[in-house]
Image 1 (tube, rainbow, N blue to C red):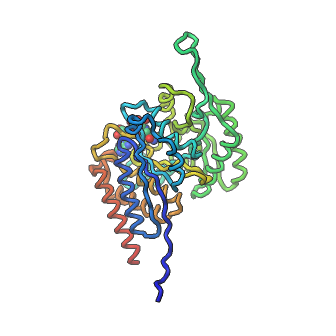
Image 2: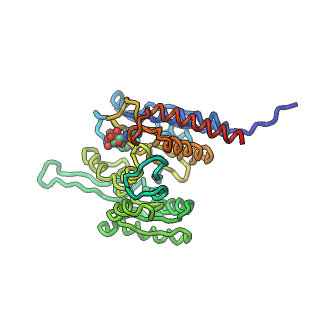
Image 3: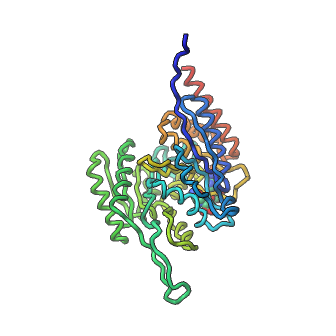
Length: 391
Ligand SMILES: NC(=O)c1ccc[n+]([C@@H]2O[C@H](COP(=O)([O-])OP(=O)(O)OC[C@H]3O[C@@H](n4cnc5c(N)ncnc54)[C@H](O)[C@@H]3O)[C@@H](O)[C@H]2O)c1
């Protein structure tokens, strides 16, 4: 008798770019957990292709991404990214040479950052009860203040001039607003807060507000409110439970941007200035070591990129104490984006379980190493999948 047909499992091709600092440590941990999960579930497979694009590569070859690199990358279903940045390469060169050089051509216009306080993790907010802080921050990732428009002239003269031009187009605002409303609609509270600085920036950000109001009419089931970014920081700290989904322009949510014309220290400087809402959110949720990011091309014409929000963390590189939770959460976001919702949920349940049991790295007040946290997650998955199988 012919053997019964096995259900075919999907194979996803993932580009792994660990890059610099603790990037390789956390991406190794993420691949170990993802591979174990796929092996246990057997309903899908993951094939990782490793790219050694990093600051080391840049120092040897003068390029982060080799010729033809983006075409290779385009063939994958998703990109699993570590962190880029090295002490001996200026930050604007590393960031714009690798990470942003992928975001822009791949039209990853929606930057999505879920934030919540995981079980067992203490928020620095004294009165923050479980469930109070549960947000999704969506950042416009393709234009705004980081469109790279502007320049400097008459360098060194008394009349030296520098301009930054923020770009806001109806097209890009509309697409990010629709994405944000759709995200809010899928969440129980159905509330979207639109953040700008439209009192001071009276053209681009007023257009942003107007388009938000127009798009809101397509989503009568989603409540919308508006905040100025300065007041927003206060609301995040004092009334975290009053927020749910948040959409903001590139600058007000975090520095990022496009390959611009400026190529000097001013770029790096602006970037530091822009780390406002989402870094605050990560800190309020307990540590930057747990916060994930997705850079999505919602049209799915290009692969989307998933990364922990943190950087290369020179101070802890090689010490084996990098918190891998941000990368696990990022991996769960990647699985959900690929359509593997069950695997994504299982992974986040295990992350919650080991945090609740306080198997955590020093940034969360624990003493576990990266490897111990990783092994604990794999064991927890094994336990919970064993339970599922025996039901
Ligand atoms: N997306 C990215 O690739 C990205 C993001 C931010 C910074 N960077 C780069 O990283 C380098 C260092 O930047 P930085 O110091 O401003 O930010 P960082 O995120 O690397 O580190 C800030 C602080 O948080 C700690 N930290 C970060 N991740 C952690 C983790 N997983 N576990 C425990 N602690 C963690 C670090 O030890 C450090 O004290 C720079 O070159 C910067 O340009 C890259």
